[in-house]
Amino acid sequence: MKRRIRLFIVVWLLVLTGTAGAQYDPGETMEAAARDLDRTDLVIERAKEVVVESGSERAKNLLEAAIRLQRQARSEMRSFDFDNYGQIAGQRLGKYTMSARKKAQRAIAVTRQADENENHVRRRLEMTDELIRRIEENTDSATPENILLVLETAINKQQRARELFRNRRLKMALQLTMQTRKSLERMAEQISGHLKTNRHQNSLQERYYTLLDRIEVSEVAHRAEVKNRLQRAEEFRLQAEKYAAENRYSRAEKAMQEAVNLLSRITERFKTPERIKNSLESMTRRMEEIRSRVGSSRNQQSARWYGSASEHLEKASAFYLAGKFEEAAVQLQAARQMLSRAKKSLED
Image (cartoon, rainbow, N blue to C red):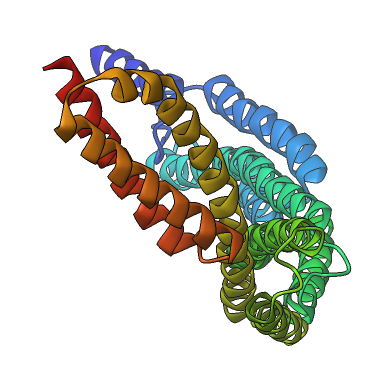
């Protein structure tokens, strides 16, 4: 009696903990075995619901195996002989029904994992879609043909990945959308470089024409040297256009920069005359301010310094009128030094 009670307790612990290999000895009841089978039936019914919804082929195969094992367990139940073959029959019954329950539980787990995988793949597809959208926003008629071809190929691959996803071929869909994303990321870098170069190129062109307008209305535009520089700058500009048409953006940018640099140097040249003109006027005023003091002073050295300053100032004016601005600047510097010495001599 004690042995039967002990075996009954062990069997029910196995049932309650879901351990595979449950068995029924002669001392156990048909009711206990039936309840264990019923528990497996409940798990199988639950698995049927989620497996059908998931559409997972793997889960479906596990469920079908669970149903076959449970049928075998029911068959063992019908031939359950407690008196003569209880232990052997109980072992077979426990093995079948617990294996069936585990497979049904595994089918449920697979569907849950499939749901997680599906959400993961869906997110990856959405990320690739978003990258395609951003890239399309940054493309225009000036985008290089090779970049547009890569984009078109990527869009076709993404559409194929979407089809695979709808057909629940998640692994292939994930692999394809990840490959597409990698190619798009490389292309995004190219487009970013293209846009940056294109913006810089447009900025250089705008700078070029602004400088050209200023030069053409300036007083130095008629000079042969300036005309030669303008022609050379135009050659660089045309060369830049040619490189850009060939998608050789680095060279196009370099050529356009050379054109702008040439025009910038010309504008610096005609800024120089204005500065010299202002300096001549300033020096003339300073000379006038101390002329009377020098004339009334008995300081001969001061008079000599002042006379020397006047000579340099006259030479600077002559060079300025002749368009020799560098020579004019040298004479102006000498005039400043002489005038400074004259003033210091007067103060002493």
